[in-house]
Image (cartoon, helix red, strand yellow):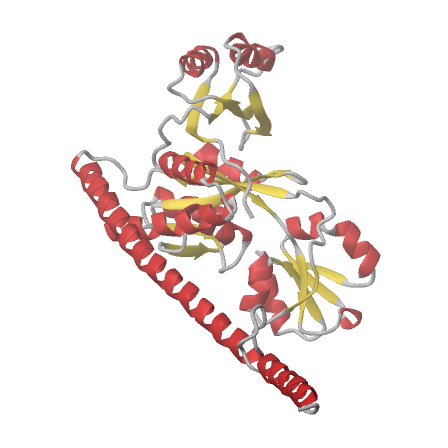
Length: 395
């Protein structure tokens, strides 16, 4: 009997060990059980994702159906299918109503493609841009139209204008100004000679990358568009002082050239590098942080009023003292804020200048309308290039 105590203790000890090794002790879970429960929890969450995806697909198709009904109503009343001011309003509203965790930019990207796909059901849009693919003009067009359009790469800014003017493309995307280099002269010149309208703007953040198939130490030539080389001149002087800089028609053409040229690099977008199989040797090499190019979407009609608009116009004044001051006093009297003014000489032998002016407000606003009417009385020529919604920077 004296031995029974220790035996019972040993049995208890063994039982305790067995219990610990098993699953019966409260608060302890074996590795196998943890994996099983985790696997079961993961499967349940994935099932929930699948259910939500089915609901999202159904809702997106419902939305596309309603958008199709709107498109049908537009066609019967002679309205354009593409309404940039409305699309901008929708994207801003989507970002503003979200409580997270998705960022506003992420939601805008999703809805931009949803809108693009819905629009494509109703109309096949052709959009001209400076080519080839993956230039900054192409990226700006993607941000504005989404991927469900036919992009038409052209060889020059003038060619983009001609595409739209001739009716071969519904819209074009052309650079208007850069925060580092200023105006794009080719664009302003084409506005002065062709009857196209600005219907939207796309301020695109420009990030230049050094792209090549070789190491940086082996680079002897750098290709890019003149503006891109200019915007990276200080970086190039510090890091590639002996490299030959060669201007080409576009940043994407530079990437294509670098992909087949030994010891060559390109300055272009990351997307152009991926497309042409180049490595990014240095990223964001632009000299000025926040480098932004503002693109104009050109077509045959401007946009409806949103309440946060801009209006662009060109005017030609008499070549006399005080002529410009008199013209610029007109928007001031209407309390209109001028956001941009540029001048360039008239082509040919005639002396004089054409002025490009951008102001806050829509051409249907009474103050803007009065300013335009006053300018028409005082200037030799006034051309309203369009009213469009002010847009936030993307990219």
